[in-house]
Image (cartoon, rainbow, N blue to C red; front, side, top):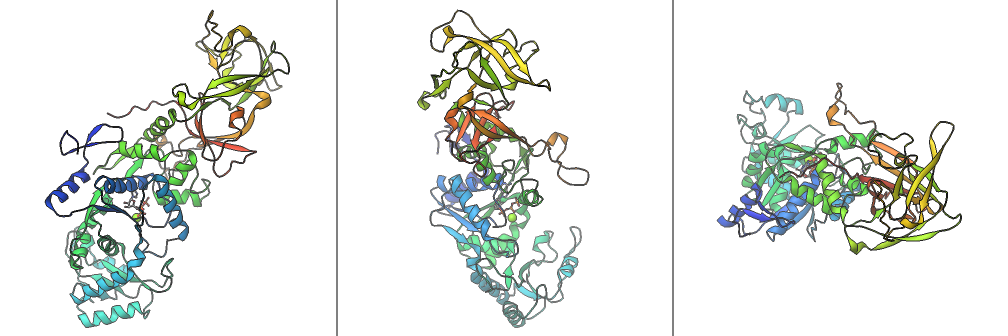
Amino acid sequence: MSEQGINMNENAQGDVVSKNFIEQIIDKDLAEGTYDTVVTRFPPEPNGYLHIGHAKSILLNYGLAQQYHGKFNMRFDDTNPTKEKEEFVESIKADIEWLGADWEDRLFFASDYFDKMYEIAVKLIKKGKAYVSDLSADEIRQYRGTLTEAGKEDPYSTRSIEENLKLFEEMRDGRYSDGEKVLRARIDMASPNMNMRDPVIYRVAHMSHHRTGDKWCIYPMYDFAHPIEDAVEGVTHSICTLEFEDHRPLYDWVVREAEFPNPPKQIEFAKLYLTNVVTGKRYIKKLVEDGIVDGWDDPRLVSIAALKRRGFTPESIKRFVELCGVSKANSSTDYAMLEYCIREDLKLKKPRMMAALDPIKLIIDNYPVGQTEYLEIPNNLENEALGTRQVPFCRELYIDRDDFMEEPPKKYFRLFPGNEVRLMSAYFVKCVGFEKDEDGKVTTVHCTYDPETKQGSGFNARKVKGTIHWVPAPYAVKAEVRLYENIIDEEKGVYNEDGSLNLNPNSLTVLKDCCLEPALKDAKPYDSFQFVRQGFFNVDSRDSRPDALVFNRIVSLKSSFVLPK
Ligand code: ATP
Ligand code: MG
């Protein structure tokens, strides 16, 4: 607790910020003795990869457990065998580990509680709080009524306790086909809350489960299973997103009727949405299945696997989630804020290298043929600790195409005929000519250099306005570089008239013949660098090979984003 008062916290940056509404609830619960500890959990369904929204939930739950010296449970909510896959269990674990949320030995599977759930269902039947119904799914829907109209009693709700016990046991023993019978909680068919109108809590489904195999042919429904999972694990604060607000009375009903001694409480917060990208497992899945992106970790996606592959760091995501805060109101966060966080994180940590993404030759006509000298260049001007490197310099270099113009507009200070510029950390060169191919594209720029202007030689007699980066041609490392734009351009609308996503056709640009300075030769997957003027890049973990490097642009350097106060 900070000196500023009980409702304040200090964040990782050392700023004092007011406590969010969840922290205030926890403080009150601890002060009043409702709970004497804090146990949170992250409960993903293993039916897809995690995305940035889940990262928020993970870091929130893990962060609260840490802050209150409590416990954080990792629990797979694997109660629905239709959609679940082992593949997702592994990817989810890897993503959470990467984010740094440590569940220690507290890894749980909801399917381990199937016996307990069955036992509680039997208990409810014995208390007269649940009954077996033969209504079909359609009939249940019709009987449920509407928001303005009360539901009708289920004609099977008058079955005796004995009959219900017998039928439920028969359901478990496989005597009925899928959909033939269900178990319903007996609550209130006239409740204004539709979730309370005798919800189905068990269904028959003859399906194999990825962990329990064929042991069960009845499976619990989410609203019944989830509160039990929380209670069994001793969770205190069950944090979920706003769409479950209307389910809270049912959550409370289940833990009360199951007679858990110190039941958990559900707290809802608003989901994280980002502009210009696709969040939501369903939409990401569709892009993957339709082959619009190259798998769940396509760098244009915001799945955690994709963010990692693109070159985001756990630190940048933590900072982002912290800046987003926790709220009860739905809103979309600007994607530019995520970009701001990764730029800030990498700025001082990564070396600045030179790369010509669209290279043209620069020949220094008066530099000796066959000579190479080595120039010592600092790796990061703002962080001396990153040291220096030796870069070969010689007669033939590559520069970026847009650093030369035959007919420059006003205020263009880079190379054009007759103009002198500084080659970064090297010499001044003056453009004395250029060559074009038959299509009129510039292929080579000719310059002369002034040996007196060597870096660090103290030469200061004249000034030049432009500095350009360069790569020594005989030593250049060839690489493929992939540039990304947002997958959706929200200014043009998220959806088309037919309801499909309005995808940005320019979301991926592949540059095949980029030339990088030789220090990048041994770059390994996930290594990241700043390329002068171009942004931050990392080595693609999927497609890069030692002799055919592939880089992803993580983020460009420029931004109009301003950190909200
Ligand atoms: P999606 O809506 O993307 O399909 P989901 O809710 O079906 O996700 P789960 O595996 O059920 O995915 O989610 C696990 C946890 O993550 C839940 O507690 C859920 O509330 C939380 N969560 C899911 N999406 C977001 C989001 N966008 N922002 C914050 N938390 C989220
Ligand atoms: Mg869900």
